[in-house]
Length: 92
Image (cartoon, rainbow, N blue to C red):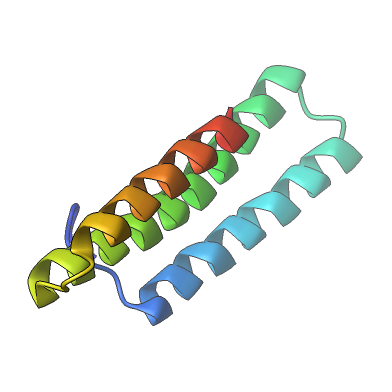
């Protein structure tokens, strides 16, 4: 998956499975009483991976709208931007 290149749904599912594995690793770290700093570093990595999936979904919607020249692309674009803003607010 090249940086900035469109991802397929299968690519995104692979990313989510990887994040799921990282999250299980965080759970093990807690069981093993690993240092808080190290646990938080791994949590940040999981969050970043999940955030990337969301951003790829939004950007793919924008690409689809622009490439197809949809008549209602303005509305679709505004909807995608609103979704991005809502996603960004939730991700904080």
